[in-house]
Length: 257
Image 1 (tube, rainbow, N blue to C red):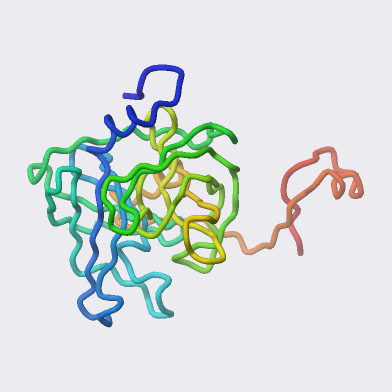
Image 2 (cartoon, rainbow, N blue to C red; image 1 turned 30 degrees about the horizontal axis):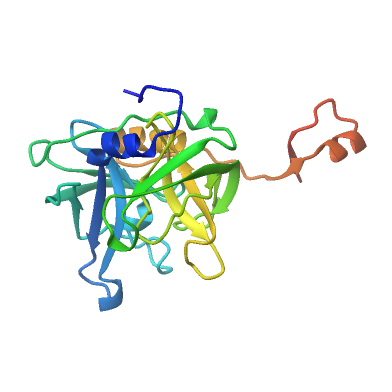
C-alpha cells in the first residue's frame, strides 16, 4: 500500500521498500573477460517472484552490433545479503525493460507498489534505490526535473518516449532500480545518466513505470512485446507553427511527408 502522510520521508521509504529492492548479477559465459559479468538493480513486483529490471543489465543489447542475447546466468541479492538464482523471462529492447523470476519459496518476497507515471509532475520529490558501483541497497533523493523526455535508448536504435528526468544521482549499478515517489510507489525504472564524464554529475533518466507495466504484462503473457509501427516522420507542433499553418490547436505533432 502507499505510505501514509503528506510529507517526503526518505528514511521511511527506505525502511518500507528496501526489502523489495534487489541487486542483479548477470553472467555471460562466452563474452570476453571484461564483458563477462554485469551488475545492476531491480525490484520485486509480485508474490510469484517476478522482478523488473533494465534490459541492458541482463542482455548484450547495445554492447555490439550482433543480435542481443540474454545472460547465461542471473542471480539476485536481497537486502539481507541472500543471493538466489533467477530466470530471465524476457526483455523489451525498445523500452529497456526486462523481467526476471525467482522461485517464490527461495526467499521472502516484499513486492513494491507501482504508481502512475502519467501523474508525475515536475518538482515532486523522488527517491532512487539501487546498488551504485555494487554498493547494495543505497538510497539517493532528488526531484523530478522534467517529464515527457525523449532519450536515446541504450538497447535499440529508437528513442524512449516519456522518460522522467531527475537530479537524483543515477550511476553505474543503479540501472534497473526503482524510482519512488513520496508515497513509496514506483514511478520509474532508473535507466541511465547523461554526462560528459559518465559520472553522477549529469542528468538522470528513468523509464516511466506505465511503459514498464505494458512491457511486463506482455512478457508474462506472450514472452515478447509487440509494438504498432507507422512509417511516417513527425515533428513537434509549436504555437508559432500552428499560427503559420492556421491550425486550431497549438500542441501536437505534424506528419512530414
